[in-house]
Length: 260
View (cartoon, rainbow, N blue to C red):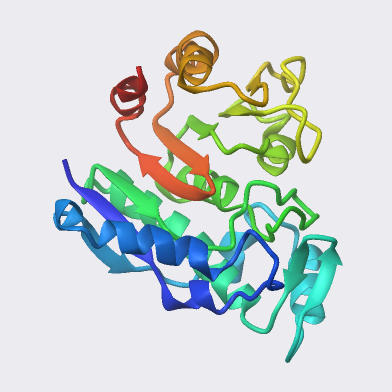
């Protein structure tokens, strides 16, 4: 099996306040771990910056332009209490989205079996026209739309196992039967969405909330009873994993079954 690892130096140019949990050290820690000899087999590439037309597959042009207009030349500009723009934020965000797109291209083309994007800022809280929760562009949503528009992929499953609910991805695909969104997350917790009753217009949303303190047994049960059966029934052509960092799998059921 061939796995592609995508990074870009711009990930470090997105600055956040000193106290902020989403900071440069996140990707430094991941990349340090991946430098171990047991990961020497990874195919490593530098991600390309996404063109604006790719971002606008998901986010409307006025929203994107508004972020560029708000970006500072120095210092930080707060969008909300925990989401800030720095001078390097948008280039980092474009490269983060670009990594997601590049992962799709190489997986769908059969160059690699799967791909992992070790980029920041993350994306799953970004709604169609709203930045929040450290997120500006919804990388998983952009990857899914690109797969459909560029490669003719019909059905995409997005599986999100971050501690927080991917409200942005849910909002974007709420009324889209061609995308299945599944999420495990702690509840109650930010951003307050993700109840099991939130199912989407076409029953294409699957939320499996977990309680604080739940461990591996409860996590695996959520996948075995709520997520995996729905993914299997949906029959996706591509699976996008959203978990702070992004992974893309062409052979989704075989890969997801490894969680069992």
